[in-house]
Length: 440
Image 1: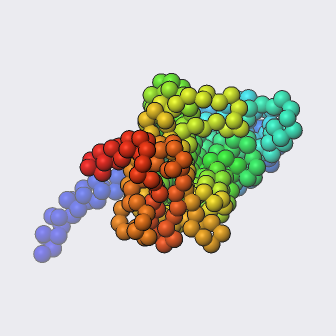
Image 2 (image 1 turned 180 degrees about the vertical axis):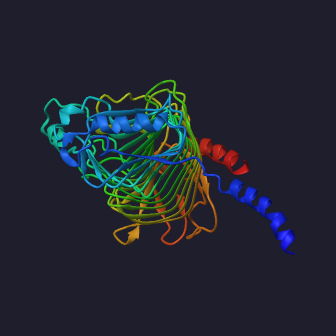
């Protein structure tokens, strides 16, 4: 037996040596060691860029570490096209602070930029855009800079943003543009409900973006979805104050990619201007919106819980006044409950040329002042599913631009249906549209 054990020892030694070979050594760059000052006053931009350059040059997984403290950064661009590294983690235990003089970055487009990067993960930390001065300037009517987006991701892939807080951005808090496979989770966005153009998270020309377990309170859209956005998943988000979750505005450009396969699920809207909104300009563009699901939403005193606006024109200033060319179809509203701050809780104002088709509502229960809310619809075709009470209400959405079909009512506990008269050419036209949808 001893001889057998002794003869095995070389084999065991070789196996142990094989399995315990050190993996690629992870490298950490501490920005303080590279000259950053956590005093909130000293410009630390160069130190952060130096840490980024070192991480990019490394062939091993790398962490950039930001210790507790406040770090003043001017505009910083973290460029990744020449990076050898596709596993860079940025771990922030401190706060990155924009210059207090809003003019320093106000015309720069974005404050912190990641462009053409891959495999970057950002964990924790706070980004303080110090935007209150710019908001005050805009409120005064003076000539002011446009403002900077706090964090912009351009043409990047496989990005994770986890546990980040964004405060008081000059404009958008987070912008995702031309990116693929982006996960945003556990994010907190905070700005005044009166702060202008401070969208929480804006997405465009991107695919495979998920936003989850986040809280967004701001002065514009909690999430805005622009042209060319596909395969988006938004779940477990608290929105408010703000303008809700919006697809659009779309159709300002005549040639514009569409939006499809978007799911918005398990979201609470509190005191927002809108709940879920699709908005397009009244211009003959060629875009589309399709494959949209709004599911399990709760409204608390929301001005427009459900809205499609194909004549979007904020402040009614220089409105195009044409028929929207954006084709909206296959939109589902399911399990939506709560209270409206206005009597009309659902507004469908669709393109006169194309209408909205394949609009489906199921288990929608919205009230106003402890009474069933109302709805207004123009040029929309679709259906409800399940039983409808009272039975005098039609079980399909057949609305046109004539007055007989411009109003609708909610059934208190179950379904939503439009009240339409059976006379008039416009009704017949939309009956045929709805029949095609139902048989599809």
